Image 1 (spheres, helix red, strand yellow):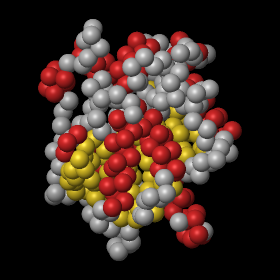
Image 2: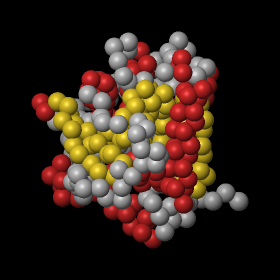
Image 3: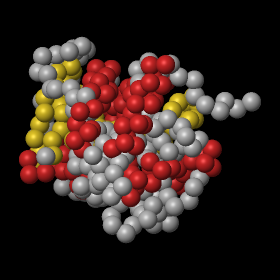
Image 4: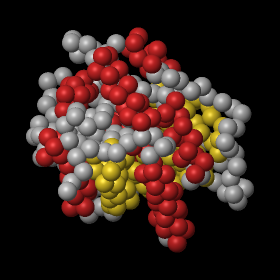
Length: 335
């Protein structure tokens, strides 16, 4: 007998209900978002130069004219002092329209990455839709990479750069990775790993998992349709290459030197069919792809530390980073 709904702690259920209600209530009929309402409900974590659990943070401005900045997470208790640390460029989720690098949940996530791996983490505060549409978010992500390339953080090894994101942030991570792989202007940055966590992809088709799991926490067809309508260029449908990356209009990757990729999929995520198609597309393009599926996981599961799959994800990302470091130590010419 197939389990019809996830078994979740009450704490998680209450949080999911609140997030879903606020998301729906903030969407206006004219296609805009009530930012004033969200400003009261998006709990912010300030930067802290005093280490908390072995990680200090600061905010770095890239372009004040578009409020482009990133939060830098630097671990202070690192085994093997003197060794430079890999760099994770992180993109938060939120349907391209919600949340930020200072949202409390994502501040906690990035602290955990910085401490557990350990790594230097740059969490990108990109522009949001519908005020700014595609490709503004991709431009912001790529410009943060250019900034890091010109001004490397202390103790960082940008030849070991990983792009990580969840949901819409995973979509950004993928598209920024493609741009990074095609550029020849970087002096320091080398993207050696991509970690899309439950990436937000879609299309005009309604997949089996979208229909079967309609009503699941956070993700519904109504909400995702709204997110795509606000994000995609005016007049574009959901088969646009930014949404349906593996579809007929998608970017051809067979000739692109793409990094090793590890994709996370949840058994209660309605987007799972699109995510599997993405993985199969990368494999057909000759790319190194590892897929990890957690059968009981909801969308954005890893943001909730009380869920057992969250700890598994952080351990897997740590192993992935270590594997890429070992590969490059054994093959110096790859750096």
